[in-house]
Image (tube, rainbow, N blue to C red; front, top):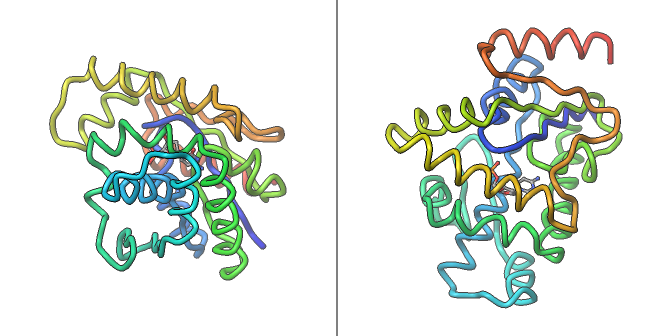
Length: 210
Ligand code: DC
């Protein structure tokens, strides 16, 4: 299996870089954050709040995350998983150990089926694929991460987004089960002030020596 693991906080550029890197290497790309978002959306829609019930719901969910978009039980949820409501609720669902066990199993099965891939999230290098060929921890200054999110969304208050990102990162890095952390053996790439091309070049150089 050829797995490239990309972790890091919100807005560090993981999705953009993972997608571009996958295309360069002829691998598929998996956005694991979209999986946690999909479970969160399904729990909100079903008004399920109890932790065990949310975990059970995640086990029964049909989830498709790929090129065509995100489908939850066959319904296109590509846009619905990115609303501020889902973004505000996802950290709590992602801290649920039952949900995490289910998502981990699905992520490993996804990679096994494809002989690997470029996989991005928070715990990919630390927990899901500790034996990955290359483990990257992508980061950027909080201000730049907030600015990127605002430009992705087309509007928004940078200060407010920066505060929201900081709160989510804090929640994601202090949870008990597989918190966001720099995995052992990972390389930190600070994307502040770098173009996508520059980040990609750095990663391709790292891969040559991996
Ligand atoms: O990458 P994102 O912002 O779409 O991720 C949404 C949330 O999912 C994030 O706040 C933390 C959680 N997440 C996680 O706990 N583990 C992962 N491997 C990926 C995402």
